[in-house]
Length: 298
Ligand code: MLT
Ligand code: MN
Ligand code: ZN
Image (tube, rainbow, N blue to C red; front, side, top):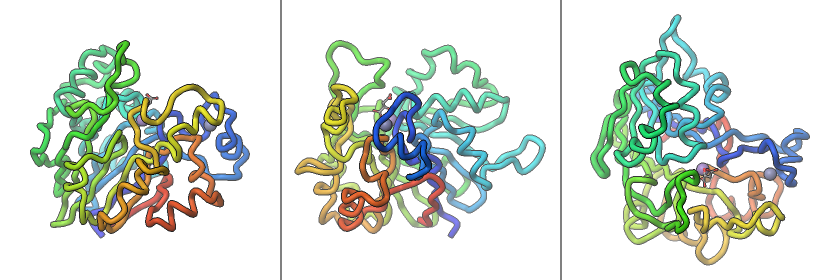
């Protein structure tokens, strides 16, 4: 019971509803007919007391207000040990600006992700004297909260949208997109909110895992195009979709993973409608559709 995770935000960048989106899901969420979801973040504790937040979403203020274990325990005391970010995307770092109130915690990321944050002077508002920026080496276990260890590993992905040049490699392997192996009390769980491809390395690593939180951005690679919302496919965004022969539903079949939980779902994804056939299919194939406030004992 002490090693557990709380989904602070189950949606991808934009959230559900997204401010400027009139798609079916966003309209249903605005009308209160399906649950709204905030942007991508997971809180984890290894001892039931001290917490790490994985990814600082632009919704972090409301997410923390809605999560009693993350409330202040004294005038200016919190059980928040650290924030760890898995890439430099806006939905995963913009929330750092909310955490600028001279409150101590440690900011963990790879060197490559720290460089992106360091290069942007607005993040100087998060005072380094109070919030040390610690570099995590890939594949080296690091304690991110008392009793909780994180090991970062490269997963195929791309640089943040705001750093894209003319040519974009969407399945780069390096420090810009990472997954997290979480370990406490002999138990292990994985958090991979963005992943372009399940390659052999990743397949071998995840085989037999007891719990996995995984990239659920889109149901179909072309769903944003189909819904008239733009030209971008999931592949172009560096996300593998759920359905289809290359999708995560197929890719994880037979990998013997105890609990598979989708997170980072885009507002267009039909699984966000509880009564949709796509959600029924994902659940029948062994997946849990993450949602804000969901707690999972690891
Ligand atoms: C993504 O996950 O693809 C990004 O968060 C997109 C974005 O920056 O809006
Ligand atoms: Mn994202
Ligand atoms: Zn929408």
